[in-house]
Length: 321
Image (cartoon, rainbow, N blue to C red; front, side, top):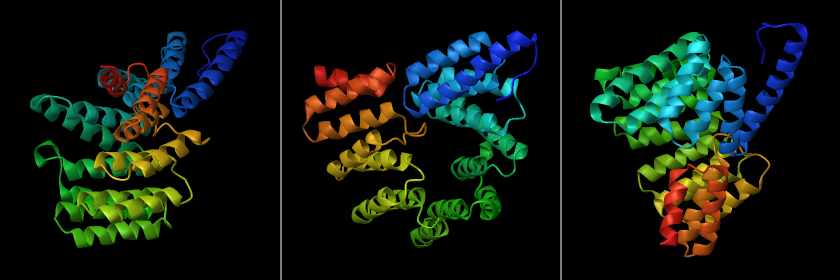
């Protein structure tokens, strides 16, 4: 992180040291799932340096993790306002608009969807090689109706560009397109091509598992999850996401518990899979197995890291009734 020189030499040194510490600690707190501590740290950082775009973006992501869409939008909008040329800040603002749209009324959602498209398109324009931005934009084009700028032809164009940047992601987009056309044979072919292109990455196996889940091909789903969780973990979040899929599918709770405990015991927790959510999911799996005491302990562990995480609150209240 590079800071503007706006004060005398000694103050610059002090501010630089403080900023470096915060820059190291805030992402680490998010990666550890300590969202309450991250929010406190980032508010302090912003109080000292209101024009710190990176801090606003991190605060946006902290609120995003607990589903506080209004505060997340506000922080992400501030980050974009302070650094409008940053592709990743536009990407995050688009993501938050999308989540807020999902919980809004029809008319509000339509307006937010247009903002999602605008932010994703701006992210791609600012950094044409931003794979995450192109993938999210392709997904928007896939899912959104034409009235707000969606279209399968647009998604297909993104897949063509992604073929150069990240062939596995290109195959994933093509697989989603095939599913939209109700062509499961072609979709499976593309998802398997993604596995091959990535040399068996955990994420591509996980995406194949999701495809099998949509088709209620339960045994194949579990087999793909086993591949995802046994592959070299370049994407540790796949452990938690795979457990989440098993729980939501009502399948193999012991495997879900094993994956969550493995993730929580690792030294590889990441922001994409917040530790507090892993504790919540572990509590859910334990509760479904009849272990109410163990479940309550996990829900409390989740709330100790993110006191405003509503799903853990509701689950603990349910057990206490």
